[in-house]
View (cartoon, each protein chain N blue to C red):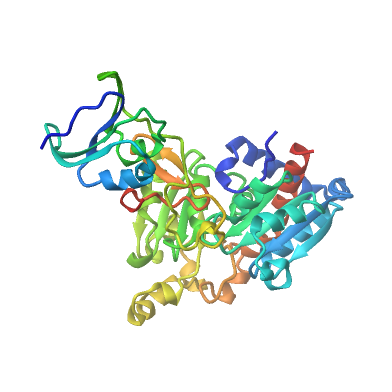
Amino acid sequence: MIIGSIHDGIVIDHIPAGRAMELYSYLKLGELDCEVAIIKNAVSGKRGKKDIIKIGAPIDLNYDILGFIDPHITVNIIREGKRDRKFHPTLPETIIGLVKCKNPRCITSCEQELPHVFCLTDRENSIYRCRYCETKAEKHTL
Amino acid sequence: MKTRGLIDIAELTTQEIDELMLVASDIVENPERYAEKCKGKKLATLFYEASTRTRLSFESAMLDLGGNVIGFSDAQSSSVSKGESVSDTARTVACFADIIAMRHPKEGAPLVAQMSVNIPVINAGDGGHNHPTQTLTDLFTIKRELGHVDHLVIGCCGDLKFGRTVHSLVTAMSRYPGVRFVFISPDELRIPEHIRAEVLDAKGISYVETTSLDDVMPELDILYMTRVQRERFFNEADYLRLRDSYILTQEKLKPAKEDMRVLHPLPRVNEISIAVDSDPRAAYFRQVKNGKFIRMALILKLLSENA
């Protein structure tokens, strides 16, 4: 399968296989006017399979969620057909509004206007806990 | 400057806990010195669920400091019954009071209150999550009863899985040197893995787990009793099998050290026989009294810090 290269834009690479659509949704890529390509189950030397997202415009993105999903994801910024910058998203100190607390006893379960906030409590093991009830964030239930 | 309340015991340094215990001890010795320290100040007790000890302890603490008390002890008698948010209730109350003590069935509610107001909020229990003034009460009681909180063997007995007071006590006591824990519970109610991994193993603290209270009784300095609740068991037969082995009687207390102390966060149901109450080692009602003194010290500290 051939996906054309992009002139100015972003390539999000090394997404864990099967999670590109989740990112597509969280990054609100469906709202963009530019070209967006999702490549699922691409061959990966390190992981066997990976997903890739290509975005055909130099837009601002909230990279916080990328680090939360997997710090091994790489972001490539493409300018004039060449890779201008490549980086791994860092683990954000807090994640606001992207992950819902699943604890039915948490105050967020009954006060709808409260933002769901998760704080990084263990960087080594990428563990986030709800600011209010300290329930651990489950990465597979974004 | 950010207003400082007390939501989680972890917000206090060991030095601050020790200072609070010193002030509380001074209050016990010299209550008259503190009788007007909070004159003109108001404590709001916002209790969204039932409580006997904690609410009355907070209110007595403020009254003994010369302050006044407002609040509610039942969410149905407040605007909460009309659907008011915790944040709005806290902001309203902050127009009248100088400090808030809040109990709420939902975890994190006192933190939400603290984030909404610029007066200190004390967490008086948020569901099964935190109850920092109970932990301060437990520490202060151990200090008063035995003279120190380090180099002790602490036995925790009963429901160690769901008992928030045990989790907080273990976390707080693990700051002090030479503390060793003995966890006595049925397999179904063992101390949670995250407490073992993140607190005990992480700090290299020695502990043993057992199902027999009798076997370990002679080595304990403190026996912290909690209630084994019927609803925590998967089947009735297991509950009936285990229930009596965690009831403290005079007979079971016989091999204990003379200066061992029995603590319980109360209320008890049947886990400590009433006959044990007259044993000098039974410290749980003194523990209730200590709760008032340590809360007085805490109210003083938070009001002076945020003055």
